[in-house]
Length: 119
Image (tube, rainbow, N blue to C red):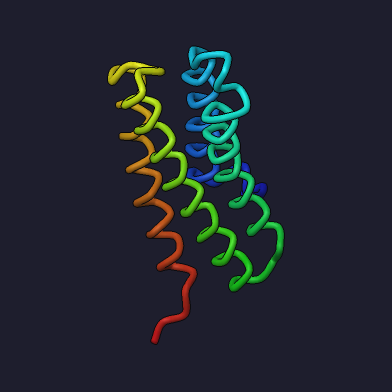
């Protein structure tokens, strides 16, 4: 392994961030500094926190940053659902992102469980 870029969880979260950027391109211009920006920041925060935690070099720090990534994932899901409800994008555009977010959430929970000390 060459580092965090080899991790499936990081690769999948980068893919979700890319997809988020593509979907938010169609949002109204007046949302550029609103929901568009919020969704993009949440999406990029997921792989960024996984990478940062990995780079810290300690298990407790890694777990902490992966938990932050988990929170960012839930934030992104909320932004995408709101965008769909407001009619900024279609169900067809958002559904695959939410499916991927759900799978990524499972991967994050599994990673946290593996990294956390056993009672």
